[in-house]
Structures are given as C-alpha cells and as structure tokens.
Length: 104
Image: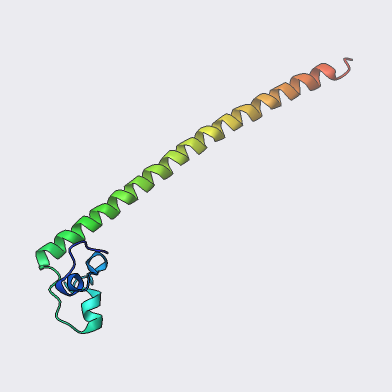
C-alpha cells in the first residue's frame, strides 16, 4: 500500500508518494532494497494504517456484495416475468389450437 508520508530516505530522494511499507515490519521496501536504516512509522501509526486499509477493503467488498445481490434480485424478477409470459403464450396456443381444430 502506498503511504503519503513516506520515510526520510524516500522524502530526501523525492519518492515519498511511492514509499511502501512492508507488512508487519514497519520498514519501507526501498530502504530494505538500498540497505539503509528506515524510520518509516511507529508501530501505532503502522497499525492504524493497516486498520484503515482493512476497513477500506471491507467497504469495497460490502459494496460489491450489495451490487451482486441487486443483480440477483433483478435476474429473479426477470425470470418470473419470463415464466409468466411463457405460461400466457402456452394458454394462447391452447386456445388457438382448440378453436382451430374441427368440431365433431
């Protein structure tokens, strides 16, 4: 996840907007790659950031679940309408068939 604050190394190199924290380490990927001491965030801020990311993901998931439910309801409604029309056409066909057959 991208963090807008960034660590000192990333700020000094004007890359703070792409400073990425490695989960559960409290260090950024770039500092690890360059083998420098990282002062990314305190654990409290890290936990808060992770919590916010989790809540954002949960919100997105809830919205997608709601959207799926809405489409399922729409599909079920259309399926009911289709079945009603199929039954009505069946009745119309029977009436037309009975009226066109020769009476004995």
